[in-house]
Amino acid sequence: MPASAEGRDLAIEQVGGEKVFFTDVLVGEVWLAGGQSNMGFALNGVLEAEKELASANLPTLRIMQMPSRGSAEPLDMAGCTWKVATPTTIAGFSGVAFIFARSLIEKLGVPVGVILSSVGATSAEQWTPAEVLANDPEWNQTMVGELAEAERNARLVETFQQDLKAWRNENGCSEEEAVDHAWADPALETSDWRTATVPFAFGTALDTPGGGHFWMRKDFDVPEDKAGKPVSVVTGTLDRQFMQVFLNGEKIGTLGDKPPMFYQAQGNRIVLPGKLLKPGRNVLAIRCTVFDPASAFRQPADKMELPVADPATLDGTWLLKAETLFPAVSPEAIAALPNFGTVTIMRASTGLYNAMIHPLVPFTLRGVIWYQGESNAFKADRYKDLLTAMITEWRARFGQGDFPFYMVQLANYYNPVTEPVVTDRRTTDDWVARVREAQLQVVQSVPETGMAVAIDVGEKNIHPLNKQDVGDRLARLALAQTYGLKDVEHASPVYASMSREGAAIRVKFTVGTGGLMIASKSGLEPAKETPDAKLAQFAIAGADRKFVWADAIIDGSDAVIVSSPAVPEPVAVRYAWGLNPEGSNLYGRNGLPASPFRTDDWPLPQK
Image (cartoon, rainbow, N blue to C red; front, side):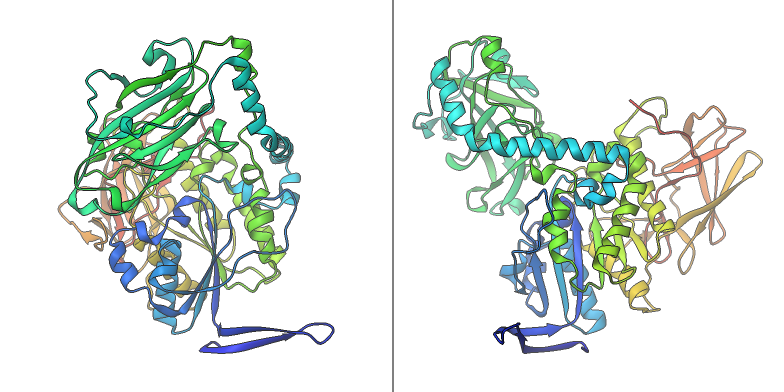
């Protein structure tokens, strides 16, 4: 049917003559938005969120969010419904997907529907059909083991509460008492509390041979512009403990009371309500119930994403005090604590495909936008093959040909790179850079794909707030490549070839309109040319494979000349090769940043 913004009734006659009616049905473009937490990052948390929400009354935008769940077998029912985009319905929806869809509506003038299917901290294996993983010995071994552990854990979860109660009774570790909120009161006198620096084990920090009910407190200063707004903070690994979290004296949530969170080895989050966040001093208090004195708290304050003006001001020091001490128990008793692995069906290979993608087959899609890869950082050497296989199989399952698949190349995050990349050890910097390289390789080898470079929108936080540029760049890809709008600039400069010229290397690029430029970017502002600046984040190496920072100059419309006096016979160049290559400033004159790259194919460092 032709696109139509007129809300109409749809009647479906079933076998036997019964009819099912749907009202206010539009006809338009439907896109699937998938991936991990940066795709799921809610609009109400992005830069200038209030402004975005105020303009979110879009009756021609329809959104649908798949419930977060996993399954050992493919499911048929999606379990969700379409909603009209309003400030209320869109607030918790993907910021990237909203910006993307809004851009399409503005340019195309037709309704757009977006189906969001994302879960934080997930690998591509979790989104891949079992049959694909089964064809590869390494992937299959992982999948079989994870599915078996998930099945075992599902059984143990059912008996966890009664098993833990029996263990506590047997070992003299009292049941929960009523919590005295005075311990969380900001006005509480804490001069007799101890201090401990993350990471710390409770038993060591408090000189106790057993567990107990332990309190932690930390002050943090909230600036005026962040007060009154809810924020999700990372509380870290639970490590055989329960946590009750308090903000300014009021309990705001509990972690670990339901399995498998008690043992969960991944970052946990809890929302600080905006109504409790005030400008100036705020007090975060956590009551931990611990049975093993070796249980620890490991989350650095500057990684908790607390709403402070400068995260660098947050140190790892907490105030600690024991409320109740449990008796010391034997190592054998600690080993007998009710235990299960961390792999639930949601965390097992293929589990999310079965529950959050397969129920949509064969819904008609125009294409997919994808933001994922952080969780594959330490498996980067297989990411190209995995992502290629996943895309290929998704297309086969939906049966609509090679529908477009546009991905976000991972943004810069965490501490800025200060030294050229090393290749004699396995580093996070190196492996995340290789995820970006794998994403570029997929785009160069798989038809009807595209990549939005985001190396300039990140920040120290792994969840950058600038989702506008990300959504806009994905929309540019779709408008130009899927819908054929010739006037839409969408191509970032991409490495094409290199050649040796004496003591320098000429690097050529595939560029968009206008060639290359040196530019800088801040927040939501467009990239601005800075002709007096020097190109940054270029490194060069000789045959010894030792990189040094390089001098780099733009030569013509599509080339950069790279050299260093320290490398008279260069053989390789790398650009923006690191976790956070802050200051990367090579852009196309269309305002889009160049993709990170390397000219070498030297082996990936292993453990």
